[in-house]
Length: 126
Image (cartoon, rainbow, N blue to C red; front, side, top):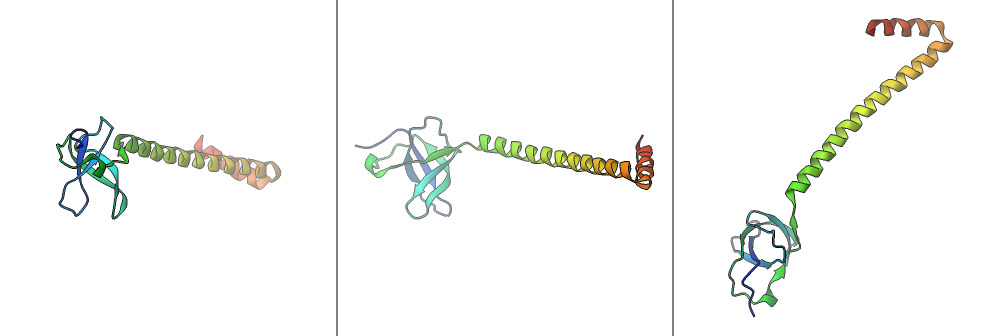
């Protein structure tokens, strides 16, 4: 028995030969990236070169792909992660500034010179 549909053709980096893998994922298209289990290198990310390739390779000799890689989801998650880092950095800057103000206010409540310095500093920004 041979498999003639949902067979994808891939090429490993630095290898010219086209290899075939079976998939039950109907969304896989040429140009997608998938993970395959390579006999020499284990799990490898490769580009899909062709889909629905007619092949004479017996089905028992074909391996399934491991998974299609969703680059859009990966890029969106990366964008969210960067935005979260940016927001946390800004929040930390605000927290640090607030902590300093609270410390100065406490110091000014017990030290007249510190109070005068803080009043002068505040007057510069009001």
